[in-house]
Image (tube, rainbow, N blue to C red; front, side):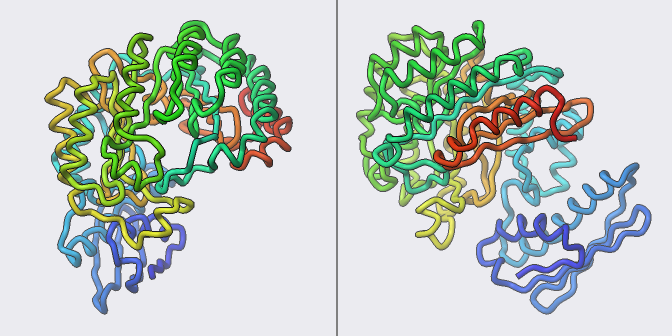
Length: 458
């Protein structure tokens, strides 16, 4: 149990505690004292007092608060790292977007800052490679916008999934009304879109819908776009058909996602998939004639998967030669069945898995181009998107770096209005469950209009 005299620091410190399995059960007390440019953090842990004194200048209350967080987290990380006898790959850095923090400290000078937080050299180099991989696409410009369309339907729910989705057998009755609401939202979105950079239809598993249902979505999106990058998260191999792929091509889709997760049949069965690795390969073969850029997702650390099995998955993905390969680290959030069944995130072999993926993908000519982290990640690692030269996904960069508006429609969709000059973001989330979304669709559209036209909250 952790307590801090500065209650607002408790969530920040708990992010550090969660990095170390077992630390949540220990008594930790904290107090932060600030005088001028001196920050003094006092911890009581295992009956002993530890004091950390840091000095830094600041010019605003916001900067002072940021420094207070940084020094407090670093002090606690130092204590727990010594106590448990291990250093973590990102040190005391718990933020979701390391690249944003690096940019804030200067592309040429962030390395020393990261070293001060305990970030390992490999991840400092990875961050620099990601920033380099975004050049030519990364653009901070007021009015840039991406469009996200949520289709929260799946064939089955995987054991690691925390999204508000359910097997299509239990939600199919909502599909007609959901598509009606989506069409209305998209029509209302037309005047809200600035310079459209990309369109992304995600899930769930969009391809679980029938071809006629998918076409309704494509028709509703069509008037809003004019040749931008267009992605459909096609999803799982057991719902692929040539008819759906032809529809994608007909409506201008430029890239699709095949969410393999693993090429081990044993693993696929364990996570609740109803298809085999051979089915995933057939999905690739089915999509090849249409000329899409393809992204293949893999997850390191899935249920009981060995290092050898993960290496085989990486090797198979590389052999299939998609434009992008995203390597996720298993992350168990509240709502995932596997989270309820697992007392701890296994770290066995995780570092070796991540290291192998980086080595193999680099050797195959892929470069990292986006990077993000989440809470409850096995081994405190990260998710990395890798791309062949010239095939980076605009949508992924914009969303992960939060440099463009994101107009999101559908249930469990979070719209973001980015105010670059003011350094702030306003968010508007739609209800997560489908029935509630349907009952409030008209109100949601009105709130979204107010946010994007400047008549919303300030």
